[in-house]
Image (cartoon, rainbow, N blue to C red; front, side, top):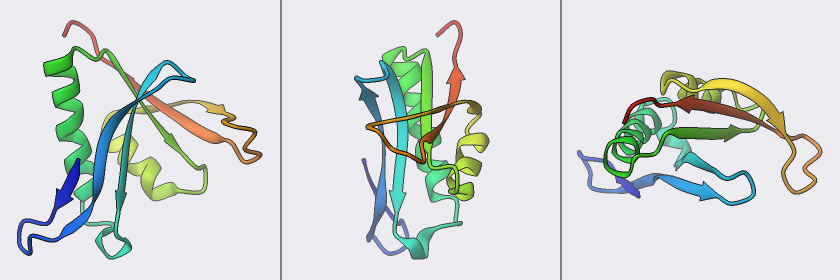
Length: 107
């Protein structure tokens, strides 16, 4: 989903849910222009999409993947209620990724 800044009408980034076939998980992701970092856009947009995913589509578990050094992105996942679960290795990536997850009950 495109994220548009209300005040200016400009495209500032993207946020979305994506099914990761390799992991058989639904991933929340977001990317924003660097000048938009730290302003709550990722948290706001991802929270709305997660509510929609759970409420309208019955998704019971959402994960987030983050590079271990990306503390700001991990902070967003924690604000969204995801908790660190494990390290994973995707496509032979030496650094690996941290997988955060949130389980929903009784949709």
